[in-house]
Length: 92
Image (cartoon, helix red, strand yellow):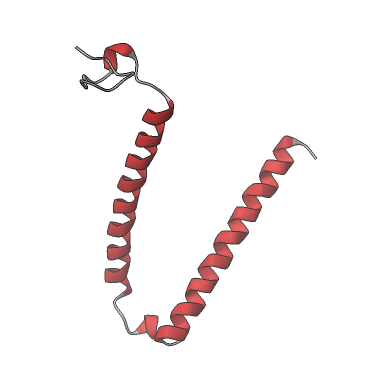
């Protein structure tokens, strides 16, 4: 199997995992609220709230990634913040 084929299989596994996760969330919602409750609720408002949550999660994830990046890749000397007393940082 080529690297491309292995990668395609991995992507498909994750897509299948996503669909199964969506189905389990749908089933959980149907059990909790009723199988067709979505017809009687304001799903547009709910979607807007979820989008706002997703935007917040994107911000939080961006910050985490930047923190991770800064912990594994030291800043260039001319970009390093001036933090007195921290070894490895430019101290002036």
